[in-house]
Image (cartoon, rainbow, N blue to C red; front, top):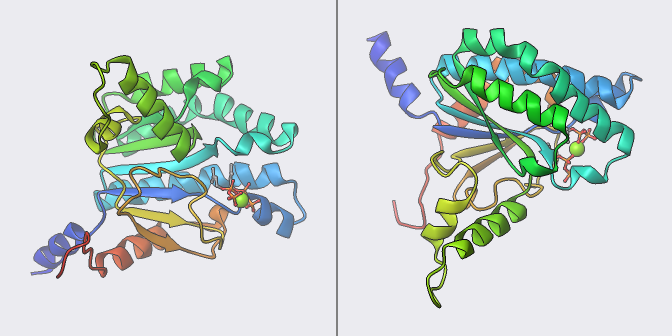
Length: 239
Ligand code: IPE
Ligand code: IPE
Ligand code: MG
């Protein structure tokens, strides 16, 4: 009986959760630490959430790591974030293997420095055979930029005066084989999307939590997924 109940509940979990990991800087400032310490702690929170998502059987997670707008931060902070990726990603291979997580990247790769590109490529390659969960890192990602790049990609194969349509835009965004996001969770209290996955967020459920990102754990992530399970998605229709 218990099995049937848990099986039913798990059916209500989202297939794809997007995480806007906000509040790292405030977490550090509250502790009189430098902002970078908050980013470092944020990695641990992302690992806790990944572990929980895998154990709940959620197949896709997208973490908003660095936005197209984040380049406007002080150079020192941008450099730290890039170094964090370049130096720490590949060392998580054991963790990713244990969890069964395949890593992919969403965003404009071409603007990242060699060190980051190399770390990302190596991590993607080393995790390509993992099948439990797909973890997408949105890096130099912006919803507007993704749509513009999609349209430009489509234009390369345009026939005559053909007009673009929704299906064509969807087919040319980054990682088109990943289903649209079901639930977007934002930590840190702000209630906005900050240019995250705009095309695929069209019908996403949104959830905002005050808890700062470095304080996130598996329990809170599970609560967010369960709360999603209580919602009715209407898709513009009548239920
Ligand atoms: C989010 O935390 C992490 C990134 C944008 C990389 P913030 O750095 O935005 O933290 P707050 O919002 O300033 O507290
Ligand atoms: C969103 O957080 C971007 C990431 C989490 C990577 P920001 O802190 O950059 O967003 P704003 O400035 O509050 O909109
Ligand atoms: Mg912020």
